[in-house]
Length: 494
Ligand SMILES: Nc1ncnc2c1ncn2[C@@H]1O[C@H](COP(=O)(O)OP(=O)(O)OP(=O)(O)O)[C@@H](O)[C@H]1O
Ligand SMILES: [Mg+2]
Image 1 (cartoon, rainbow, N blue to C red):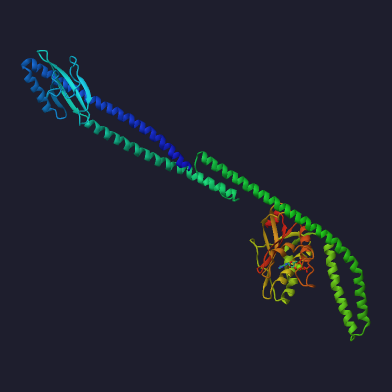
Image 2 (image 1 turned 180 degrees about the horizontal axis):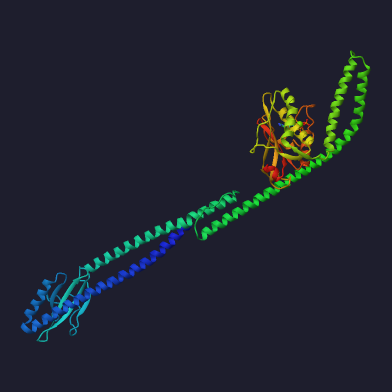
């Protein structure tokens, strides 16, 4: 049974008990008063008639006295008044109706209830009349109690109706109040607790009650708030830990691959120089028409390619510290884009420099960077974007400024930053590829097209500058790479 119903039942029972007792006592009292009134009226009337009759008897005889009584009987409609002799045998027409009344004490009226055979209970009153000859008669008053019983029935009915109406009213009011003040808020509390239990910590209770339930709701809201904060902190900590572990793993891998690459580059470098040298000798010595000369030229070209890769490997293995100087970021971007324009056009892709990709319009942005290294980073991003684009598509390169927090695990406080943004509308990447793009030698390109070192080198360079690379991409929807560098407060405001 619900709380509001229990309250209603308890309050209704209590009110019913109080009202029923009160009504019972009131009805009893009214009945006693009614009875008392009836007896008193009878006594007054009987005494008056008996007095008149006694005086008439001694003044002008018993006939006059009896006439007096008969006259009174005609006057009084509600009472039957008779002259009775106490010394006549029962059954005599002037004998008392109540068979037990045979004698009366001097001047003391006798009032008693008696039910004549086949009738309702009736109130009989006898008032003695003493004649001059010493004979005793009496005035008999006979009053039906039907009126009293009607009065009882009416009073009880009224009391029952009033009590029932009050009980129903009190029940309805208690039920309404119980539902509004207890039922509904408790239901909301239960619903809220269920949501919190299911992990929804954004739910809040809006109870404006200034009572215990209101206090409980406020406490539950505060508890949910604290739980939400604790969960967010825990998630952030976990995320930071995962990122830190990932960074460590990455750094570890880079170090191992770096050592390996340095060894290979060293070992491969010398034989390569020999191959290149001998190829040049053959080209110089052999006549121009000879196929051997053409073969030697191919050997030389391929050896140069291998040498370029070895150089890249060495770059990756032994990154040199950036030689930072003040540069205008827009100028570096413009220079790089200009250099790559012909490569893009060859593949039918257009390089665009919109006024702004991000929220803030670019103004000259002074940054402290190694311009050669930064150019290397942007070049790799733009070349990747060109490779991912289909002929006819565009690659946008812009500068964004804003305020933001570095990614988890990177460290550092949120602050102003400037990002070089490279956006293409090409193949995009699925989450698996995205998770590995900064791994050294990870490439999806054909053999000879990419070494898979571009992004890992870029990552290292940007980190050395205190920045980071952000990526957003979806298969078939293109990719956006942002090279973000922290800038000083004045620089951001400029
Ligand atoms: N804009 C892009 N769109 C789709 N995939 C990309 C994009 N940029 C990078 N990738 C993916 O990341 C991989 C790694 O890129 P990364 O620049 O490190 O190496 P690479 O371009 O394959 O070779 P390298 O740059 O050494 O010549 C690419 O092979 C490609 O799968
Ligand atoms: Mg690349």
